[in-house]
Length: 92
Image 1 (tube, rainbow, N blue to C red):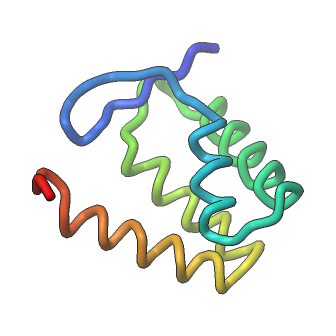
Image 2: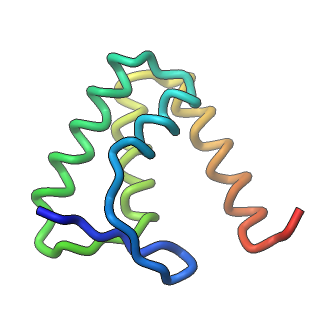
């Protein structure tokens, strides 16, 4: 199944589990925890009724799953996402 992700800028790209792994490891998950979370997200995506999903829907699901695994990493993830939202579209 080829899952397409609709980004905030309206571009479409293929789902990449590697992106999820990179972000959640940066938030503080171990390699094992990151693999577990990524597998959970991929499984959830495959159950979705349509082959296209928004990046924000994926972000919300990552937040749900990361809170189950590591609260400190979840807080860091939330902080980073808020920073990205605040600076979305701003050239720094």
